[in-house]
Amino acid sequence: MNPELKHFLPFKSVAIALLFSILFGPLGVLYSTVSGGIVMIVIGFIVICDKFMVPLVLVWLLSCIVSVIAVNRYNKRIWLERNKSN
Image 1 (cartoon, rainbow, N blue to C red):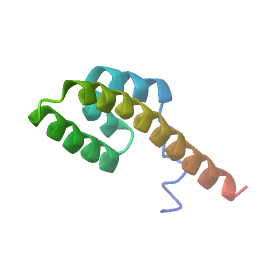
Image 2: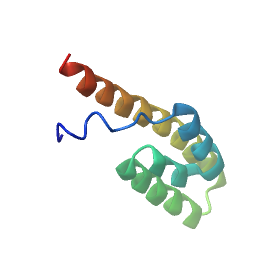
Image 3: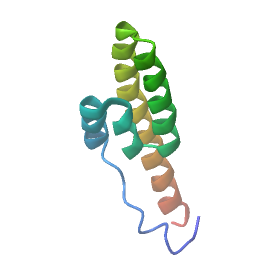
């Protein structure tokens, strides 16, 4: 990570990540993690194409869980980078 940029990277909000995931499902995971969002969108697309409605609810819930975990990991990594120099 570029030393000049590490002090300017903001923390992400867990509440907003959860809100986006509740409202938009797998698409809302993109706020938390781009790679995780793409994976969840592909899984959701497969479930919708196969017309599995019960797993769709599980994909929606899994999106919420993945989103919160990803934001917590991101914030922890930013916090550790900021405090490493102190």
